[in-house]
Structures are given as C-alpha cells and as structure tokens.
Length: 113
Image (cartoon, rainbow, N blue to C red; front, side, top):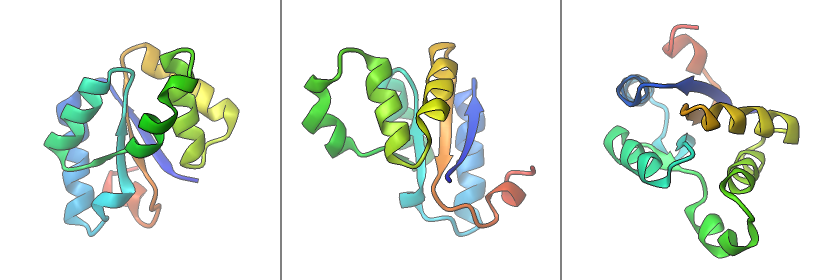
C-alpha cells in the first residue's frame, strides 16, 4: 500500500518531496493530489513530483459525475481501498493536499515518522 501524508501547507509538502528526492526516491513514485487541479499541478511542478495518471483522468473524465468521484477513483488506482479513498477524499474536501509515495522503502524514516 502506498505511503500517504496530508498537508495544509504546499511549501511543507514541497520540502518533504525534496527530502525524498535527496534520499533516492524516484520522481515517478511521488504523487500530489488535491481537489483543485490547478493547485495539484502547481505544487507537483514546484516540488518536482508527479500527478496521478493524467492520461487516465483525461480519457475517462466525462464519466465522473463530480470531482469527488474522480479523486476516489485516482486513489483506488494507486492502491487504496474504497473506504480509504473515501476518507482521503473527505480530507481533500477540507482543503488538504496529499503526498502519495508508491515506494515505501525508507519513506517513513526520511520524513521523520
């Protein structure tokens, strides 16, 4: 299961992404996700992280009735259960942005957990 950490502050997220990169975590395994696509893309670009399956989202975007459905689907795509995806989507409703790392070796040690 991927590692996930919630943030309210975009700069703190960017600092943690840099720590991960400095410790050899590949950019392709580090994702940013929020309710606001512009925010997600801006933070991902600034932090040199990825966004979750941009192609997938564009291809099936019209199938989703609302943003929450799309976010939950993205979370499930990277390995979260439906219940976990729902919980994280609720946190994003509150303005949080998620850092998701699909490479759990040492991530918790690097980020000080």
